Amino acid sequence: MSLISCRNSWMKNRLILTSEYLYRAFCAVFVSLSIDYRSIIVGAICNEVAVLKFMVFLSLLFVPCVYADSMDGCYLANENITSFSSEESEIRTTYVKIVKTSGDYFVEGLIWGANFHVCHVASPVEGSDGPLRMEYVENKLVYTQREAEDDINCKLEFSFQNNRLTIEDANQHCSRYIFYCGALVELNKVELPKVEYGCP
Image (cartoon, rainbow, N blue to C red; front, side):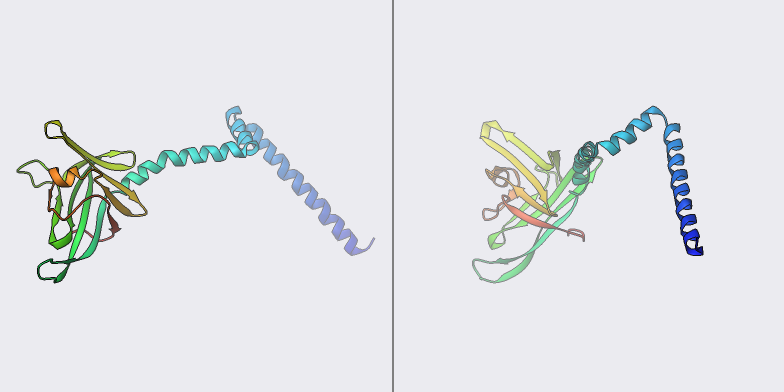
């Protein structure tokens, strides 16, 4: 037998022995585990679909928490406002500031409309200049105020998607009756991007 053949045969036998050693070592570690751990490993190996479903379930549990934490911050846009009388234009800043404190959300905002009319979003309590407290409901911030005797049903909703805030005041009762808003400015369908720097 040539030297090369002997060397190849020796390397082949060594690989077989090494593989057998690794296999035996794996079996020894596996057997030493408790029944619970072995069942988990077997289940994970044999049922990949179940593992994937479990991971999706965990992600759904944690997404609302992450999403809720990302709501606070400053949403802002500069707008070109034109005076009806002089036809002169100036840049004004529309913004909404959201602060989360101890699980509660507090909102302050200034919305600009046509002819320099503005809408102040803050606490509607008379004599108070503090922020508006909003409730977290199904990935939205919601404020409601009903006054049955005056047929007022204000429901203000803030929804969030792709780092943008969308304000909903479907029946316009909030802008007309609850907050200090000019006749030419609305809250409904206002959209503002989130910015890294602070609000005014």
